[in-house]
Every structure is written in C-alpha cells, then in structure tokens.
Image (cartoon, rainbow, N blue to C red; front, side, top):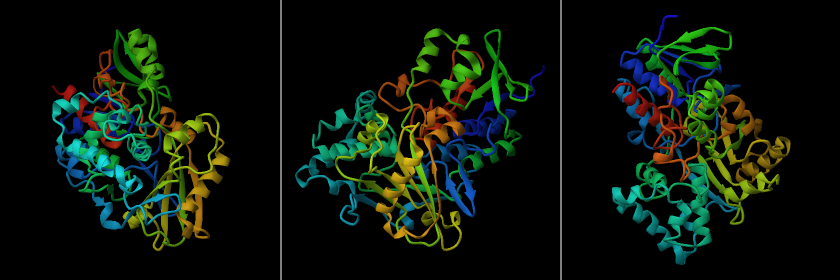
Length: 462
C-alpha cells in the first residue's frame, strides 16, 4: 500500500495539532485523526443551552511568553487568537475561610514576622543565574522553600499554588520548573501580568492550529479512532482504524497518552524492555472534579476566586484523605467566572462559572455533588436561588474522554519526571514519535504541550 501522507497524527490535542500546523506549513502532507467529535483534547470547549464551558480550566501566561503564540507566528497566522487580559475585566479574589476582602494576595495569609522571608523567595528567583537554575531541576519546591522559611502558613501557600499550577505536591514539584514559570508569568510577584484567556474559550487554540493545517493542505478527520499503530520490520508504517481501514505514512505521531500508546496502540513487545517499563512507571499529575454552573443573572463581580477553607485543609492534605476514601466537608479550589472575562460565553445577562477542586478518580460522585455545591455556595452565597442548571465534570468522565486516568495535565512534572528525566518526543521505534504534555520540556499544560510540538518539529525537519 502506497503512503498517501508524510505524517499521520493521532489526536488533536495541542501537541498534535501544534506539530501538525508546523509540518503542514513546511510542506508536509498531514493527516490528523481524532477519536472524538470535538477537537482539542483537554484544551477544548462545548456549548449547552447558550452557555460555553471549557473542559477543565486553564490559566495562560502573557501571549508574548507562550509557545502557542510562537507556533502561530511561525505558520504566518499571528492574529489567529484574540487574547483577553483577565485583570482588565475585573478582580481576582483570595478567599480564606469566609473572609474575602481581607486577603487580596497570598502574602496577607502569612504571619507578619515571616513576610520578609517569604518575599526573599521571589527576590531569589529574580537573581538566580542559569547555572544555579540548572542545579534545581531535581530539587523539590518544599525543600527549596525551607531555605527561606519554615513557617507552616508560608508552606501552605506554596502548596496551594503548586496544586493550582503544576497539579503535583510541592514535596515532589521541581523548583527549576516553578522558577521558569514565575519568570515567564509573574503571577505571585509585583508585576502581576495576566493571566490571559482566549476569546471564545479554550477551543480557540486548537481551532487556530487546525485552521493552519487545513490552510496548508492538511486533512483532519473526526470520529476516527485509531486501534493500532502498525509495525513492520521494527518501524512504524501506519495505523489501523476501528472501522478496519489502514492508512500508511513514514512518520506516525501520537498525541495520545504515552502509556496507552506504548501498551495498547503499539504493544510493549515492540519496545526495549527497560523503555516499556519506564513508561508504565510514569505517574500523572492530579485529577480534578469541576462543578459547572449556569446562573440566570449576573450576580458575581469577580473573574476568579481562589478558595482555601482554612489552614488545616491545604489541597494535597485533602487529596491524601480522598485517596483513603474520605469525603471532606470543605475543599479548596478555584472558581472561574469565565463569562466575566468573555461575555460571549453566556447568554445576555447570565453567567457561567467553573468551580475546580483537585480530586482523584473513582469517587462517590453523588456525595461529591453535595460537597461541591456546599463549597460553591460558601464562595458565592449570592448565587443561591439563581442557578439555572449545574453538573459535574468528574475525573472518571475525563478519563473516558482523553485518558490519562483523568489527570488534569498528563505525566506529572515531578523531580524525577522533568528535564533529562522526562520522556523524549522520539521513541526507540523508527518512525514513531510523541507530541503532548507528557513529553514537553517546559511550560504548564497547554504551553507544555505546544512546546513538545515545536521540539518534535525541529527533530523531524533537521
């Protein structure tokens, strides 16, 4: 069978359609296959009764620091996404217990006598040399913070921040990774640039990449589930779809879960034993449950509320309790009122809210529904009797949609899974490559996946 394509890409997540856009622009004949009827993987949006919600929730660094922007610039579509600065659209609030106005920033939670030590963390971030930074890749954030302060509240603040950004505990999060992020997006420092949000919701990002693929002659197929990557003489040569059809190309790129790709799509028998074992031992970032709420009136002024129930309920302490089967009464999380940033996401005069809480899969979701509502109303008491409709997006549901056990990001950016210890975009099998947040070297979430796409493009076009 003659190859019709130069590369076949499995999945339209950001890594897949990002590398697809770059390759199509470079003249490659691209086919991208998506098992679902919506593009984007974890970075997408859907509409119900006039309300548009994102799957999960993402914060974006300033556009000039994003790999998404760099890819669009490289494919000559720099204005394909319109970015909104959230800080121009209202306030972001930190709520500790029932107190909202008292704590405008994390620093206010820390005892006054420890605030100077806390500030020194961020002063040190600004003065680290590249060599010093390189020495911190495999140093846990919690251990590094100990050099400045051992105050429990300061550590709780850092823990909460790590859970929101990297979705892994500070005890295993990479210090260098955290510092790279802080330098690109000064979210805890004095400049407060952003965060930003794509007009039209998260789906605007994969839409832009898919537009580039099609503009430069590529092909996109939805509802096209790949059942097997075909291996002949030790090389990847094509894919077999669920309907039994076979498609060939000399380059196969998996945007799917790297663990599922190795074990199921290809088969561990085709890989060196130590490689297959290493991949299966990879651990994911945390998963979450999200309460989606449609409000009949605009009753919430803020665009975001970071919620910490009390000092006894840092995110990962609660997560550990959940793993033991305990359902907590109070759970910290983040409430995003996306229609306050982009009014087009809700019908006129109405609001849409996503309340996100870290939570493992396999929970009693009926009980969790009660917990989520109680916490939501604690954060937004003005929303009582204003709710038109609500539902939960659970970790179990996300697993069926995009795999990875419902993880928020994918392979966790822990000290043993970053930098040279992170899986590469290349594989031991000729013609088989990876492009997703599982293999990206820098960034968070969407930017991490986009970085993997750029890295793979450079490998394939050398």
